[in-house]
Length: 236
Image (cartoon, rainbow, N blue to C red; front, side):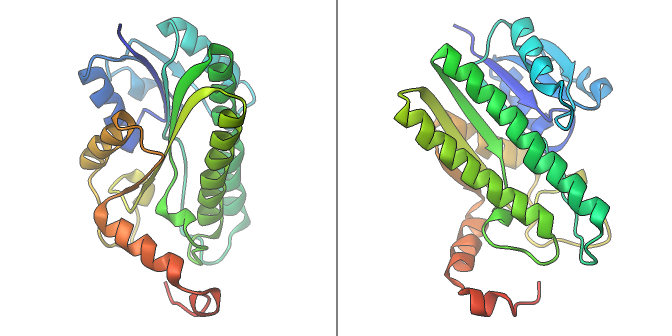
């Protein structure tokens, strides 16, 4: 039986690469993003323009699910992020709107669909940025921490309700995508193609949390051990 997947944020970056891999593996894929014109090149079974910051996004998701005949995997790759050392209000609020409100809106709708169906798999790209509060990107690291905890809470709730819903929290390090375009050069940059392969492996192996890659697993393990009294003095 051919499995069915919905990818939110399929127009670029990691979401685009994961969509390509799913199609190559033989999945029936419904691809969604704000930029509908970029979805047409993917060869997905169906496409839909979905802006996660808009209130009609859950209804559009249900429409897309109907067009591919169901959903076994919900893969969420939508998000924005930007360094904001001057704490510009517009950047902070836009990040919250997309990464917190949009994330909750879409993950919640997928969860409700799978609860009705009785089973499913929710996989979402969060970030290593949720490990600690990062001064250069306050709203970004805060929303990523919120995403980590939200997925953890839903996993606990699903188990307490006896729902067969699996969760995979995917936490990449710095990935060479448009999200990180700019003058600042990030260290240990990962290629979206290799990240996408690691993501598919994590999904197939039903990982609960997957930090990508080994260098970032070491880094975040170190971060967690730094006490707050020292962390506040680090220059990042």
